[in-house]
Image (tube, rainbow, N blue to C red):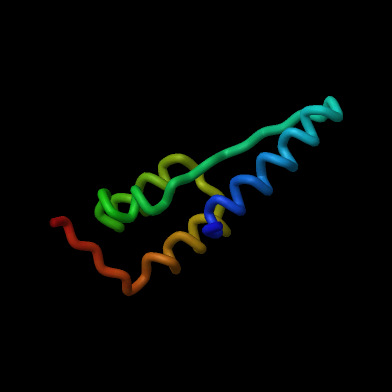
Length: 73
């Protein structure tokens, strides 16, 4: 079983447990692979800033992209 599927199943189990317990749940799902493949990194940084993404998340994303290259085929 791949790690993405394992993570999604674990998340789903926790999510349904919270809902069954009557607790409020907020989620945000991001597919960074598509963003990295299709958007120039500087433009992605600009978009994240414009949507008031928190400093820690913005920093993490910027560091992840630092030194990476993208290619469109």
